[in-house]
Amino acid sequence: MATPTSLPATFVAGNVLTAAQMNNLRGAFRILQVVSTTKDDTFTSSSTSFTDITGLSATITPSSTDSEILVLANVKGSSDNGTSASSFFYRLVRGATAISVGAAAGSRTRATGALGTRLTGSAFILHSDTVVYLDSPNTTSATTYKVQGLTGAGTFYLNRRETDTDSSTSPRTVSSITLLEVSA
Image 1: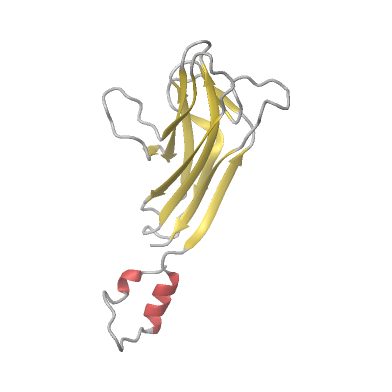
Image 2: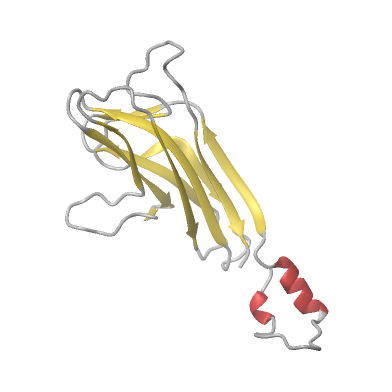
């Protein structure tokens, strides 16, 4: 594993890097591994508590405790609560710990994002959201990242609209989560 901190703090004319320093520099800030999961089927839930979205998780085993994990998640969905407004909140989770969520503020839901809001009279909405988050898990153990969702009221739908008629105007989409181990 690269340790760029072993390089000189500054360089001056005439400095020559040692072979060890060159190897450290060569290995610095590289992508060491990539793990990705794509969910192409649908998921539906009426849970008002965060629940795992089946099939939207990925596991990576960092090669060093200094490595960071770049998490890229793309979530597509909608929600419905009959004739009133509803929301589909989602969050990123590492193991059992929510990451990349908003600050606590009263009884507001701490989430990574919200999509699929259906306002009265605004049917057939399908939203897409992308999250980029750099995490420092500080472990070399297998670590699972996943997406969880909840609805404020009604039902949320992943990879489809709330109205899912069998026609060419009713889309099916994919959601994904990709993990990149970045060397320190």
